[in-house]
Length: 249
Image (cartoon, rainbow, N blue to C red; front, side, top):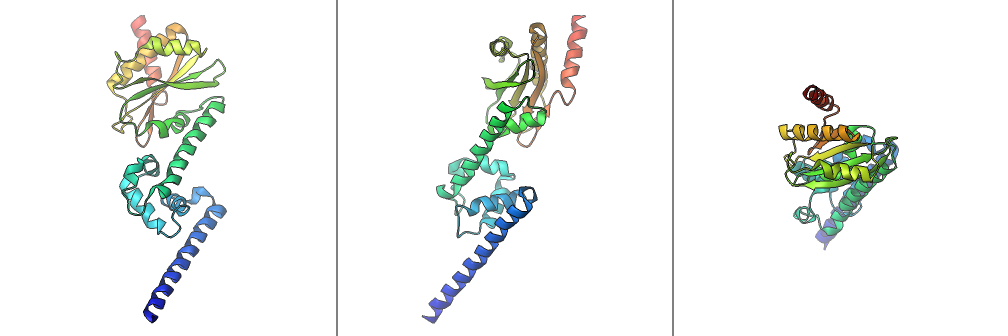
């Protein structure tokens, strides 16, 4: 009997210690703000809401060691996450909810924006949707005369090369939306956003078609696992336009 009471005492002390730690983490988040938190801190806090009696710091560390980044933890399939000890559907639910909330927030902010003002914003808008796809997808973002964002659509899927992407489909949609400029966005399943020779040739073809129809191709953003490549930022769009002028003249 004394041994049982001793065990209960240890459990109570452990629970009170964990409870105190959780309270301090939440208080720090409220006082210092989310920017003071590492990915591990944020994941630990998120898991606390569905795992009241687990060491969520250890679990957060395990998940990040496996997936490397917070976004890849959130992108991980439900069945895969359930393989981690202590992660049941009830515990995974907040991860999936926050992932969808983030995706919809970025989409909503983009549609209300006068313009996705930089390639970074284009990347932030689409990264949760595109960075972990196992196939290539080409999206086109449409803008009006005042650079207001008119929406975006997925127009091609599969291996994207010059012969697989039809300019008429892209510019037909642009004309329907009364867009005067477009931003091309596609992903690289390999994770490396560096453009291929085919990517550059495709972009050149679309820039030329856009010039003929007076619909400007502003940028071609390639989404990778942990970053992006902007052809406008890197000077590729201007270089391709110069090449087109030389060839025409």
